[in-house]
Length: 410
Image 1 (cartoon, rainbow, N blue to C red):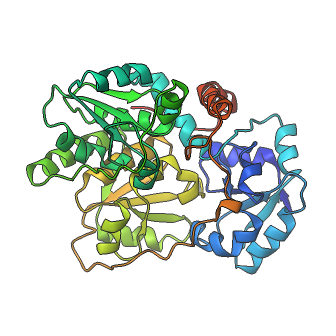
Image 2 (image 1 turned 180 degrees about the vertical axis):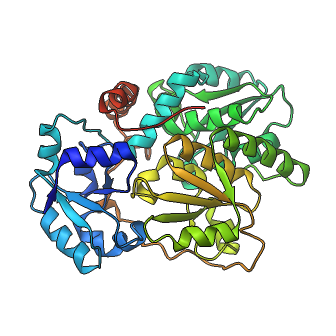
């Protein structure tokens, strides 16, 4: 049995659960795929599918582009116990023939959402030469890098410090306690800079706040040198600072329609066998390993917003978030809600016993199974970086043509 492109589009518009899975290698996936497709290569289905698609009666549709991978993938899924796995009628060619959009690169809908946020909120940004001028004149600025720490250590803006995205509302006031200090948020390209900057604006920080326009890509294309090997992080602060961050973030989450639940409510969600439930602890890995609620996986909030299709490939599922200090879960939830997810925050997650160690996630893919992003590392060609930016600039118009996203921006 196969599922038509029209039926998949109907499910997306109705917000019914569906996991649309591209079973090609990630480099081929990055050349073009439906907006809400996720990618699991045939060779890793047995490893990744039980982790990323936890409910065995989830509607799953797999596809390739004529390589002969979809049918073997379907057999593997059924052997793993998935009862509603089918193939896309006509594969990727069938999707194109139906007149539907194909999106390039990876984490495409999160990146498209970031562009939509900037488009609608006019998120302020500064070009790389202007930021360099501020650095050289020793202006009162704090440069905060919203990427993962390992990305920051690989290459960073001179003087920048690491504050991964979901940590910004908590840690930015520590980095810039004087409201006259200008805060500049950067990532490698655009999305995490935009989301990070808008997070601080949404939370009502009194500082002037800007994104570094086009991130380290823009910095490199301007002919400016990056630093390597930096190890500077901003601490969490303490006491009243945590309380203020929690208050600010909770207000943002409320405006985005995020609901709060307790452990009794969570039991009811777990018992609902007709809905997929993802449970994520959005703190940094070291905090998670030191003690986390049972049954929760680690997905640092900034990366969860950036790579939502990786962490939660079942579109239409429920998501429950936890965080011992509160602000990180609420800020992450505010963005996931705007991305069209039903997302809840568990308020009493840390009141009982905790587990330690990692969450047992499958080992990451090696370089051979991973598409090299044009914004990673220090050896990217300028033409590839510029092409990547040009692609991002066009995503808002492509979202409008596609018509299935259901995003909103508070």
